[in-house]
Length: 267
Image (cartoon, rainbow, N blue to C red; front, side):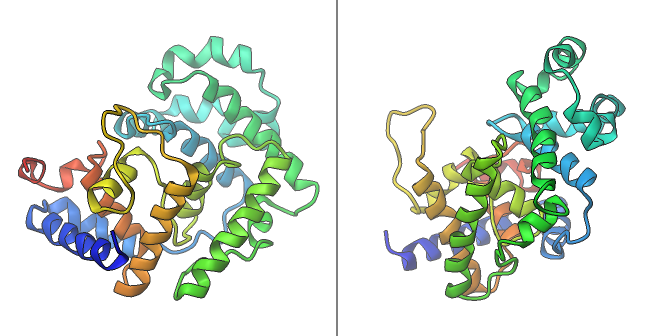
């Protein structure tokens, strides 16, 4: 399918979402449209963000994770997200003490990854003054205004991913999670997770995988989806977080389905 046809399909999706919108939709769009880059976060808050994003990963139901990370127990378990303290946690003891209370994460191996994430912050700190300074050193365009910005984005994205692989950063040395992190930091990016990829198939961005209950999309296909979203936003002068919301609604993500009336899903 051509970009022109795909863009037309995305136009139709946006119109249809608004046809069935609830009062929650416009509030969320305004919130996302006004999202600015998080340029002043310290490492402690960035570690909190990374650990929370790991919690949401691997197709974990978003609504359950939102409840979990809002608890006092979550804050206490991760020592207020103090990097030194989290990196010193013993994964086995941490599992024994907290896993029964954190079952919403689905996969217990996430707990070790969260602790290792703090250890990687320490490793990166030996070369950079902060985690944020490491990101800034790559000069990844935050706001994408034209096709040149898109090319620079992905070139520098790959450089950042290499750095994260060198320190064995869990999750964020992988494409999907790194996209998620950059999106949350205010970059014009999106997380190409199962919900977004499902919407991408509907919109003709990528081919469907008939007969596959859990499609395994390659990194190249996931990148194609995010890049197409960036190109669409440049053409339509739309913020990436807003377009991401429309695709999440189309994909049926649990935390956003209430933003349209049920009739939206009765095709």
